[in-house]
Image (cartoon, rainbow over all chains, first blue to last red; front, top):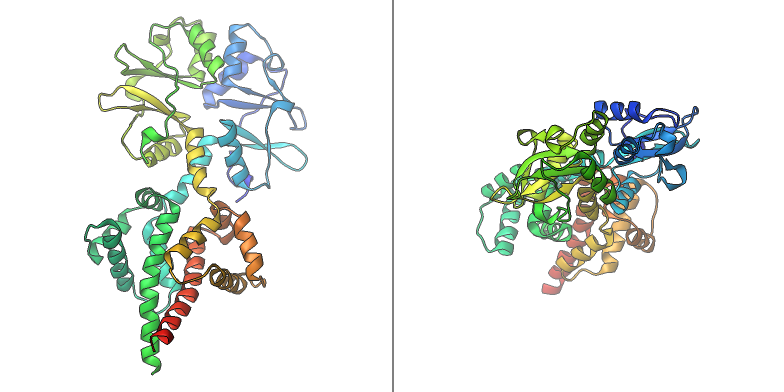
Length: 214
Length: 214
């Protein structure tokens, strides 16, 4: 996934000669906390957040050029860079948003923290059931019921709380990957649990194949 | 993980009788875009963002009570709710932050979009190598080299590009879970690939055990 697939194309921008009052009204109307300041060729020349605007209004500043951050202070991301880089910049610098530029350094969008949250949280929202379906598909010759039985066995062993295959199946229908990794104590542990399940069913499959071959 | 583990305890708050000018200065100094408005017992009575402040300054409003969102318009999250709920609220409502309350409805923190990005991105930053280490640990009797060989075989088959076990090992040392799921086309596909690897090594282990038992 690239930065451009995560950006807001519907951003507002301003020129350095625009009035602080006018821009403050546009920001409120469109609920934007940050605005890139561009020249006529859409190149970045500055950046303002609503906090520069509050300061500007209080101090009676007239134009954006009097309140904007200079271009050299602004982190940008190229549209074709991995979306992951935008995530790292946002987290490390506690940014509300980052301007996204093309190869000519023209601003083509803005990548906002809550858009990133939206994208990242999609992963967490994948149902655990989907992972089991991928497992069933991959491990040809193993049935869904065998997977549920093996999972109930591993779960009972790990948690000490007996659970039936049917109960396990209901659980994974209602739980997401995010919940599962939080519940098991992290990605590695969740993954180790699934590998245990895989080991049980694969051992059984191999055993069946050997018996069949005799 | 609970909401309280993801919140910023170091938030600023204000009372409804505070002056708009004073709060605007505190917000700028501490770079906060949102401020919960609390009563004397720390209960939420309102909420402002820097956009209400710009409007208030422009229109000459004096106190916070004249510009704040009323309490009934504000989404909150209980400190003991799953952190996942804060993630969903932020993404669905495009929030910059959410106040976190205790059982008495007192505000004890604020959960910000970039803190959520930070937390979510930790998952993406887990090295793929760690998952293989979990796999090696879980599948007792299978060596690291066997895992790398099986992985190189699966990778060659899936991508059509030959890769050696050594090259595969170098790849997973340098790549993260986030990169791996983006590269393979999603969590389910990444996971199916790992299950294929598991199938190869487990079949080999079972075969060895049978021969050993004879």
